Image (cartoon, rainbow, N blue to C red; front, side, top):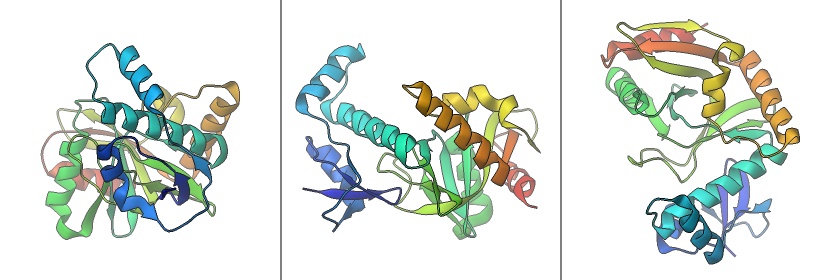
Amino acid sequence: MPVYKIAELPVLINPVTSQTEKRLQPYLCDSEEYEFDASVSEAEIADYIEKSGTPCLPYLAEDALVLTNISRAVLSGYNGFFFHSSCLELDGDGYLFTALSGTGKSTHTANWRKYFGDRVTMINDDKPLIRKIHDKYYVCSTPWMGKSNIGCNMNSPIKAVYVLKRGEENSASVTTPAKQIRQLMEATLLPNSKETMVKLLTLFDDLFLRVKLIELYCTPDVDSARVAYEAAQD
């Protein structure tokens, strides 16, 4: 009965495919108790593939289904939510960058690694979770880190969240959830009930009372990292 610690929660997952089992390995813990079961069956995987409309390998279907199960459980009962973003830690603080696919999240976080060097640790390049733990918000890595598979098993207190957009020059300014709500909603897994929608919006409101939400227009230039970082400092 394998139990994995993800976002500080022991989760039961019985992998069907060897690829998913390998992906989960760094998160394996020695607990025999767990908060919830995120496993999926071979039948659920087959149904997902049939409904996908495009070719999909079984392990990719399993990955998507397990992450969805975890994300829904975390939103429902554990003060957190899935947040499509590239995220990193610098000097003990977490920074998250969300954007429409193809905008340049990974390019921008690569610029942070170039500009700040070894002070930067990549947490997750694509699919982290955000959780409120002991009255503080953390970005938490998951085993699913995007095509680049960049990241590690760690959590970090959030300093700032950026809505990244392409620009002719680098500029960053504090914004509000109301102004960015469409992009924030596109970055998460849409709730499947009125109750969980209320929970998600409440978490958004609480999170951005505590951490900065920054609208970032940037170029591919490495100086974009400096501009973004300075905007988050008090």
